[in-house]
Image (cartoon, rainbow, N blue to C red; front, side):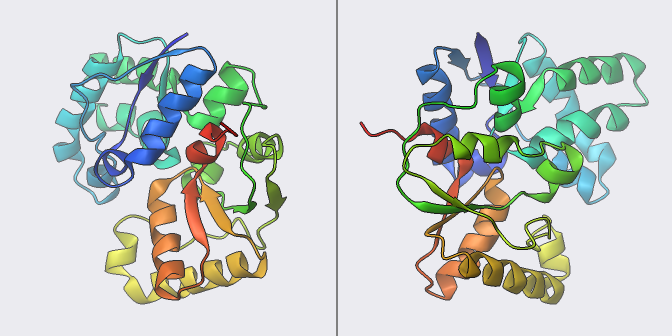
Length: 241
């Protein structure tokens, strides 16, 4: 299958390992991954902070860039959520663009969705000998409703000791600009999340969104806990070789 990678801003600028792991994993499974050079921000940040008019050119560019491809994947639940649930809304004043945005959205998947629902695979041949806990990010849990797909993938990783995260469904407190505009509340939510992560005794906390991992990982690092945050794609791409 020929799959277009929607890399996302955060992965491109700060967490390229997640994007590289996505490519490595899909190629190992026998698929061709292409990277459309024309892609830019999908507009999620603008939309979530009320700048829908400014997001419209980004939506138009995203649709134009990705509509030639049958399948699009991103290592980010939040960005896929924006494409699937916000793009057509932002483009509502232009019925033609809104229809095209809806079609692109229907072919756009978060990584675990693509693997389980489209490619029909749960055992990707990964090996990762660590004690791991999984944080289901708000967008993947509540917007995309990926359910237990990431957990099913992790359960098939050889050498991995998967431990349940207490109160896993609770937000980590990042929420994009929420963590800036409501810093005290965000910090309190992060403290709860870190306490639950540490209670598992895990070496690694994983998730499908680099933004949440950045928030959690920053807190764990400042406390010098020794617990690392690693994107789901990086774990699934790991092998014994």
